[in-house]
Image (cartoon, rainbow, N blue to C red; front, side, top):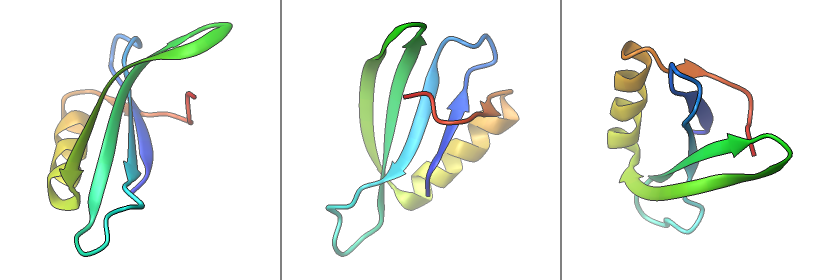
Length: 73
């Protein structure tokens, strides 16, 4: 699972990406950050969730108005 979501107000962005170190169970990292024009993004937090919980979070955010975007950093 890989993808990017942006908050409706446009400030916060979430990056969902697979944890390559997970051997026996699928895990996904969710990085939260804020793109800053002309500078590196401000990364605020990283969570590690099971793939199942990450998919549920993704769907919940889409229903709440978050939108898919191109990679931001």
